[in-house]
Length: 83
Image 1 (spheres, rainbow, N blue to C red):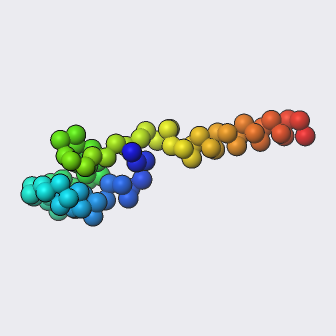
Image 2: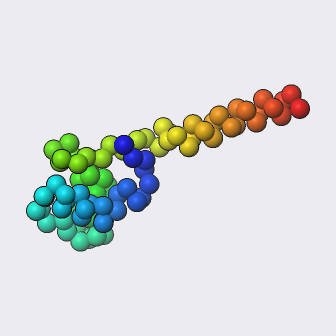
């Protein structure tokens, strides 16, 4: 499971996964055509359940950092109210 960072949808990651899964499909050209055309097409390729290595992308709102930020927000509000 990974978050929605751009690094988890990079050209180099797609190439690495394709080589590790022994996928001989033409990947295309970054930003122009094929699997490497856009972040959306790269994400679709990386999350394909038929591949031996598959990425599961967490929704942005479930990021652990968001949860920690919410906790600090509640803590700060409670402390400031009492202070």
